[in-house]
Each structure stands twice: as C-alpha cells, then as structure tokens.
Amino acid sequence: MDLSDELIIPAPRDRVYAALNDPEILRRCIPGCEELVKHSETELEAKVVLKIGPVKARFSGKVTLNPENPPERFSLTGEGNGGVAGFAKGGSVVTLAEQGEETLLRYEAKAEIGGKLAQLGSRLIQGTAKKLAATFFDDFRAALTEEATA
Image (cartoon, one colour):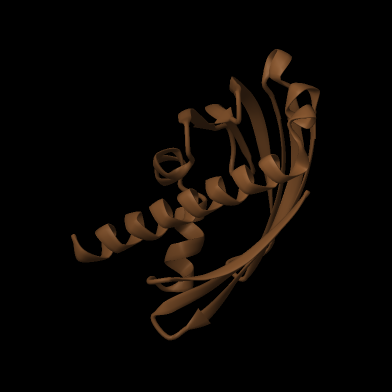
C-alpha cells in the first residue's frame, strides 16, 4: 500500500521539524495513541488502539527515524504487531519546504500488512490509512496553530 500527500503547516520549517520529533505532540496527534516513549533521538516505541473495519486491536510498535538532511528531509521506518489482528510494517520519506512563515510538508509512505488485517481488502485498508493520516495531520496542524497563538 502506498500513500502520499502534501499540505501546508502554518509554522516555520524548524518548528515543524521540532514538533515532528516531539513525543508529546506526536502522542496527542496519532489517532488511538495510548503511549509514546522516546528511547533516543532516533527510536520511539508506541502503543496504539485502532479499529479497522470489524477488527479492533492494540498495536505495539517501534519507529526508527533517519534524519538524512534535517530539517529539510528525513525518513522513518517502523513496524507494529497487533497480535491475532496482524502486523504492519513500512516506511515514509518526509520533506519540509519553507514557504515564508509556513511549511509545505510532503510525505510518501509504503506499508505492508498481514494477518486478519490483510484479509479485510485493500480498499478498506487504503481508505482507513488515508483517514488516519488526515486525522493526524489535522491534529498536528491544530497543535502548531494553538502553540503559535498561545
């Protein structure tokens, strides 16, 4: 499964990059996130509860960040296990381009799923993944907007 999008974040690039590496902001923005622990500058661990179609599961996962050219570009890889519901693994490349006081964020992500999740059908999975990404970025944009006006 492939996902990609671009959106404008109403904050300077350095602030967007810092927020994308802030576990508290990420915890608030990731749909279903119960816990997010930053083990190092490049390693995170999360517990997330998601409902995808008829399948509801608690995923435990690890994410590794690769700051290739911060704050302009970075990539991440991760994998999560939802027990009998299945697993997900994949990666994403994120680029941040300055546009005055705003930032153009672009991402391209690839993911593989297995177990019961894989049996749900690609349209349902793709639609849910797009919805989750949209929710994350809406919440992320709102968090940075609140921060700027506070």
